[in-house]
Image (cartoon, rainbow, N blue to C red; front, side, top):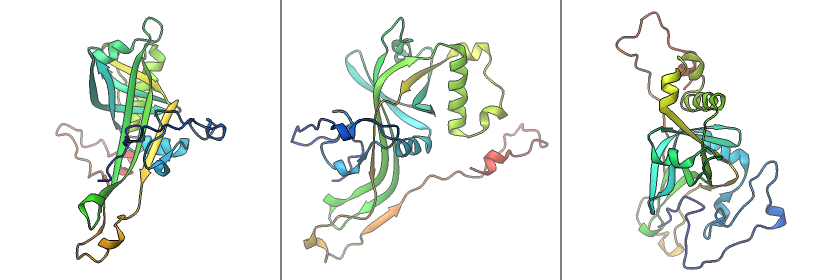
Length: 246
């Protein structure tokens, strides 16, 4: 089946790797490909374009953060926000990966792999083998560090809130000292990054084109419903414009 969605996770029987060429080096508009971000299959779907990467990251608020703990892989779903070429990932001060990340001074940081995926369509082919998904994904490799500077921490928390609902950080009470002490955030720079995209219809074999099975794409999208006010909300508080615009 054709479901591989991440550029770094693709594997085939061939262990071929591609060294980045001079023309593939990082520019102001692209990330430099590396051994970990060049896929071994469907390379035409990979992209290092910063605008595309940022658009994929900005369209959702849930990522999956992978790391190794006690010799075993762990992957956690969590919230994140982007500020320029840096991601901030939410956690708790009691979280082991957050403690392991350190601040980059007293601890070297935590090697991580962060992924984000959008499913845009179910691709139904005439053969089971050629069923697939239309998707957009981003894979980020790097060293995560805990945010310890108070000003950066506030910036990161505002980014996390606004990444979920743009404009919300200015329309809510900021975290107090106790809440800040209970919250941990790690930062991950966007240096070793790739996107991967599949779009379009099924890729049926020529000999299957006459088979009497429905084939095509079922679009998939995420929508926001009508906001439901809390039971104790003052009726005088109007729905903010930024919620009406979601």
